[in-house]
Image 1: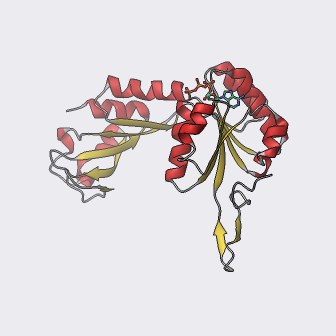
Image 2: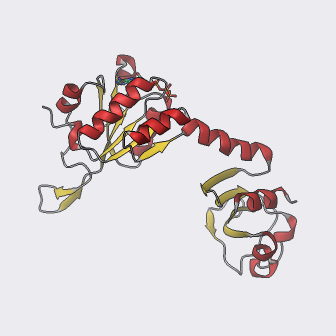
Length: 237
Ligand code: ATP
């Protein structure tokens, strides 16, 4: 069995020089559009990735970009054991359209003892069954992105992230009523239920907003609050 990584998943181990070395690794199964971008983002964040896909062309394409890319059928327990998938503590099932393969893979990962499983669902029923199988983290990328884009299309928001049903953050241009005075004097939290948490000057990076921050035309802000409130507020000019 090949030792694909410095086999300790995300635990610490000796790096050979007496120092502990953190080895951070994730297995990503299914390297379609979603799995591929997830795997590459993990690599960019210095996480080692074992990518698995049944498609030889995909594996060939990604072999130089992932720590390891292996062509394999993720529904085969024997193959997964040969790849030492059971030694990982984090796995992502990024198979969507092929629901049968998604469910069989998720179930196999559970049987292999992996506790930290993330799986993509393409429908509410798919997600429900993944949950019933004991997958702790089920994500709905298409559904969530659709909702997010709807908020962007509807208003003047440049970005919208909803963390909980009653809490969201948006990136937007500040309306006129926020300009030219310290934020503490604007009364915006009381009047509109939103908080300015970050500000970006033209050509500058985002910084934390404080009560003393004075916004000017051309600035960009990050607002937090209830989704309806931040949405309404970002429509003001
Ligand atoms: P996308 O992320 O592109 O939207 P999708 O939701 O349409 O993908 P699928 O096409 O079903 O999902 O699967 C994604 C990837 O998973 C494909 O590259 C496919 O080859 C791979 N895949 C599907 N079944 C298996 C399997 N049993 N073993 C390994 N890889 C698989």
